[in-house]
Length: 322
Image (cartoon, rainbow, N blue to C red; front, side):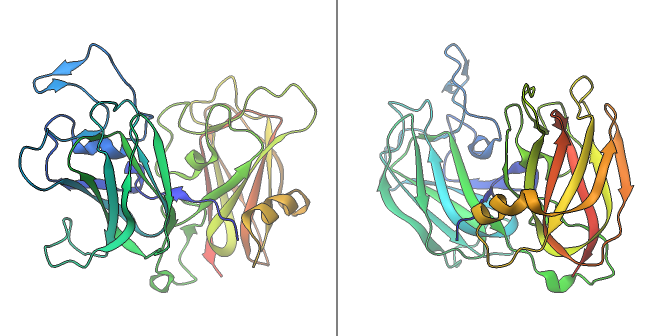
């Protein structure tokens, strides 16, 4: 069953680099920066060449370096991506990855770590992706590099593992929220911004922090499909076009369905035929729009349709778990 995963090691989800044996040349915090890594030829700092990632000094003693990331939410891991972009003569030749469950910010020395990626060869200025057979859930990830060097980015793909027993059916929740476990399944276009941004925490910080399609020059309209964090009944929709002024959609409408035992590609294939749960509504520039909704059957997925194209900063689907 094919599934679309999110990066669990995102700063906006609360992830944080909490420990490293050494980050002399490049701050460990940059290992999970959201931006694509860059190379600035003439940029130096007090310790030498500035690099966009985590980089330790040349090791002159036995051992190797490692770096620990605390995930913002407990999650089940499906794949690990190690990116050595722009590290050429200073990348580690080998790496491995472990994970654990801990209530501490920095896991103690007695913590039981599980191997997710065995010691493997890395290449410079490239990206390596590894499937994970022990999904967890986990709270922390530890990247080992042998013996030293620099890694631009670490991405931990998976799904948030939410304990739904702590919520009752009377509690209103944003069922599409990324932090709750909502995730995008796909869209027809994401030229200027990804659908995942729509369900991220907070309001959009700029026009790039949303979902935006290219200018449509043919008939039809654009769409994105989202999986709710938990099946539920939606009673309130908030759609925010913040920062989108000359490029907001003219209208939007929502479709929804309850999908069980289907893969993500199967869900995407049938989404166009789902029942409309909110009829087309007019939108305006740089504005939060709110709409009431009445549902008698729970849904697990929604399709957001924007007419004909444009950008959406945030989409909130408030409701109650079923």
